[in-house]
Structure formats: structure tokens, C-alpha cells
Image (spheres, helix red, strand yellow):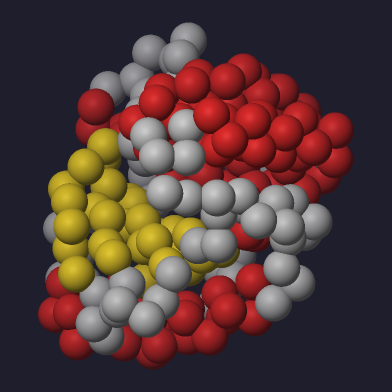
Length: 187
């Protein structure tokens, strides 16, 4: 079961506390470490989980020993969903997904710098940070879905993902019109 909670102003501090040891352990192998997802958008309700994107040069970079040493567990070689309306290869959506040590409420998404899913997560964050109406609509969608599917995470995402892709149509247009560039690392 999961629930959407009010924004916690301590989430950015939690991100930094969690990200700094990753940065220290990986050094230059970590191209960037970003706070992503709803907890990275000030004022947005979210699941009480810190999502971190670790950007690497390639998914074959030797990160496993350092992350395991920090207590992370590789749970899947997976793919993000391909946004509706975009013709992308499965390769563009590949990632590695790690669970944090048991005491942490963290999802670690490892993505390659040259892939669409890396940019998608950051455009999403930056767009919602600069467009309160879109952020508010997205928050309401999540609240409603969490009420109806609190014990059915698959149904929650089956609806949330394509609805969010509609929101991201605006995000991609915004990114293009502003000449958006991948931001510097957060940690």
C-alpha cells in the first residue's frame, strides 16, 4: 500500500544526505546525481520516497561494487515506459534500478547520459518546478489514483504514466522553446 503525502520541506535535505555518499563512492563515474520525481518539486505532494537519478557515461560503468558497499541492492535491469507518441527504441529507455538500504525510503535510478529517459526525468522535474498549474494537476491525478488503487500499484501506473505523458507534451514543448539543457549535478 502507498499513499500520497503533503510536501515535506526536508526532502531536499534528505536527498543531499543520501546523495553525498554516492558521489563520494563513485567519484567521476557519476556524471551527475539529481533529485527527481515529485519530492524534488517544492510544494508537490508525493509518495514519501526520495527518487535519485544517477547519470553515468554508460550502463556498463563499474558502479556495482561502490553501490553494494553503500548497502544498495540491484533489483532490476529494467526499462522505463516509452512515452506515448514518441518513436523510441527500447535501448533509449534502459536503466538499472537499485533499492536503498532498508532504513532509507529511496529509489535509485541509474541511467546513461545519452538516453531519452535521462532527459525525460529532468525535463519533467524542471517543467513541474516552473509550471505550477501542471504540477497541481499532476498532484490531483496522483491523489485520485492513490485513493482508488492504494493496493494495486500496477493499475496506478497503468493510468498515471500515459496521463503524465500528456502533461509532458507541454514539458517537451517548453524544453524546446527555452533551449533547455541538462542541469548541473545536484550533489
